[in-house]
Image 1 (cartoon, protein in one colour):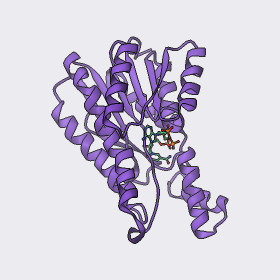
Image 2 (image 1 turned 120 degrees about the horizontal axis):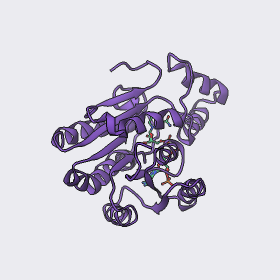
Image 3 (image 1 turned 90 degrees about the vertical axis):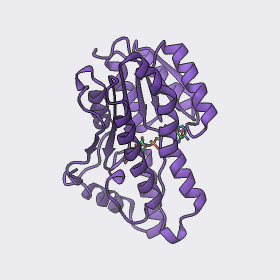
Image 4 (image 1 turned 45 degrees about the vertical axis):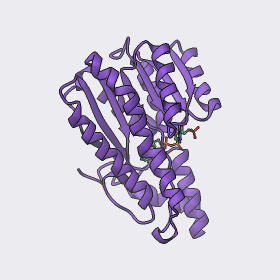
Length: 258
Ligand code: NDP
């Protein structure tokens, strides 16, 4: 129970990686605020944690909106007492050839992935710094480290998340707060299911063939489970991980080695 007595906020906590992170943090003893736009999903995650004897709350929030994030921070502070851990897992992806990529879609992906991370970190990190302890973990992607065709907006937004992580880490290095990013390869969540659907729509390929191609992108020839990403996130939040700072750690079975 290494996080007993700590308060945590998980954005994108209603499903996928964020939901797995909320469960893993709660298992380590943290009181958790689960946030996303879909109230049904966050109520489901917080409810199942509460039924298992954990302390969890659901707060709906669109993390691309400045005033909504300020309200999330206010309510989380009230419910948790203090927010010691922030996991920025909210995000969105899509694909398009550069020539077909609209400004609207570019802005949407930047808002969902990068601006959301900025707004939540700016809202919650200063109090961690003032208390002298905290953990911020941003869910970036291997797309934050390497480029690939048809995902210019997502790739640029995730590079922005890693750049933001490094700059903020430098800014608060002596404070007792660590700031890191986690960079998964393809994880078996709704986001990946939607990516497969889009590829099938565009190419007419068979869904199982597309899934096999995504599996083959990892040297381990598999998709990753949300719980594997959550395992790394809670490790970074452990009190013993204070020296790991400003890093962008890859979980992809060894494809991207940096
Ligand atoms: P999911 O689509 O399963 O979940 C995304 C979560 O983010 C949902 O809870 C969603 O809830 C929330 N969200 C999206 N937009 C907003 C918003 N504007 N405000 C608040 N919440 C929002 O995706 P994953 O769990 O797979 O992805 C989680 C993170 O991991 C993302 O940042 C993604 O880019 C990253 N990632 C995912 C990979 C994968 O293969 N799946 C690989 C590498 C990185 P709601 O829509 O209700 O708001």
